[in-house]
Amino acid sequence: MPGLYLGAIILSGLGVALLDARWRLAAWRSPARTGVAVAIGTLFFLTWDAVGIVSGVFVKGDSPLLLGVDLAPQLPLEEPFFLAFLCYVSLVLWAAAERILSRRERADAASASLGEGKR
Image (cartoon, rainbow, N blue to C red; front, side, top):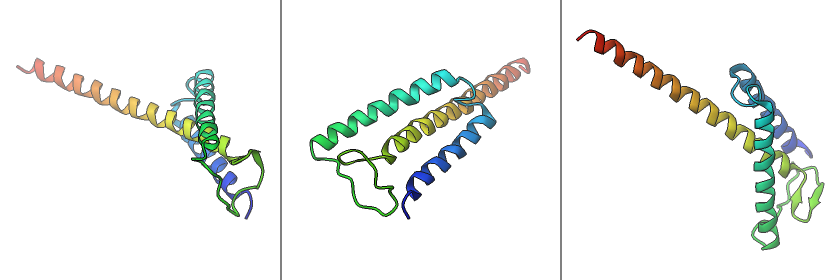
């Protein structure tokens, strides 16, 4: 079924965006900074792909799930969407981990200060 892979990437990206919106982790906290980071990451990985394609390391396999549109030889249309999704989900996960760790540190500090008052 052509387009299923691209549809899955877009649907997954929407799911991550909903989580991001709910917890204000990346794009809903700082849209410009998130957009720039995703764009830079996507361009970096597209460059990486181009080097891999030119050197013969990366080749596009045949799949009925792809649309069949190539942006360049061995570079399917779905690749930039996947790379942007990869960068975005990485930012959201990083922001979530930072938030969890900072809350833990604050809770530990508050617990330690309460313990000092009892002595």
